[in-house]
Amino acid sequence: MQILDGLAVSQHIKEQIKLEVAALKNKGGKTPHLAAILVGNNPASEAYVGNKVRTCEELGFGSTLLRFDSDISEFVLLNEVQKLNDNPDIDGILVQLPLPKHISENAIINAIHPGKDVDGFHPISQGKMVLGQDTFLPATPYGIMLMLEYYNLDLTGKHCVVIGRSNIVGTPMSILLSRNTRPGNATVTLAHSRTRDLKSLTLQADVIVAAIGKPGFLTGDMVKEGAIVIDVGINRIDDPSRKSGSRLVGDVDFDSVAPKCSYITPVPKGVGPMTICGLMKNTLKSAQAR
Image: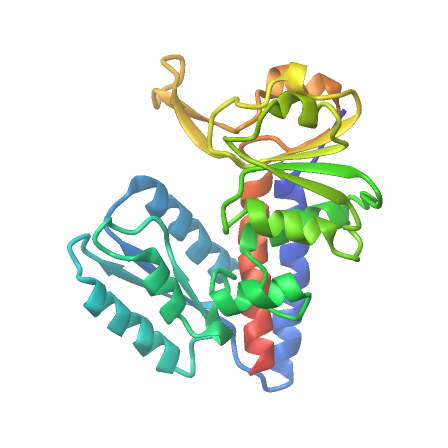
């Protein structure tokens, strides 16, 4: 069993990005600039955005963090997004989800200019992805593909089961794995919470991507020997033995699954750092296009 070390892979990719940023500046190009919008004070969102801002600084990007109270109206927030769309210095716009219930996430995402949609959530970005056209890929699936590429894992002809059908991870992941690319060329089953006899599918799978948002959902009896398991879940559970009183776990029961795997991602330090890499590569791509 080998750990797919997202922290180590992300560091390698970040070093490459630093070189590309330096080359861009030497040619007289602009400094990549990411703008992040944070609504409310959700601790997890605060941590995610803070990490992204720190990564921008590490890579030589510019960054802008716009904070708004949770009672901001959808109309005002849409106006703030439009200001970023119109600002020529901004290459990428990130709106940290979830948003308060009175604001339509779709309305906000759709308002972001597709040329600055570095999260890859806009309908135009997702449509181009489905068609195999050049576009910004959703950051988490993109990061996972970068990890598979780094470890030179050949998925050609393998059966991949993706558990979870969100537009953020599950659905785009299934599309990228099935494309005629390397890594890719897999036969993909997209499963979800309503899938009947899921265990019979996962036991057939050469690769499993768990992105269902339920801690410890995938257990050892659901995985065949030698499988590759990618754990996208980030769940905080109570743990009285920890000073904080809690700890992070994935959607995979690591202790029972890992011994059966050829490769597996840990939580934390697995997919999480790769998501940020995907976001940063998209922002650099946007800056280079300008």
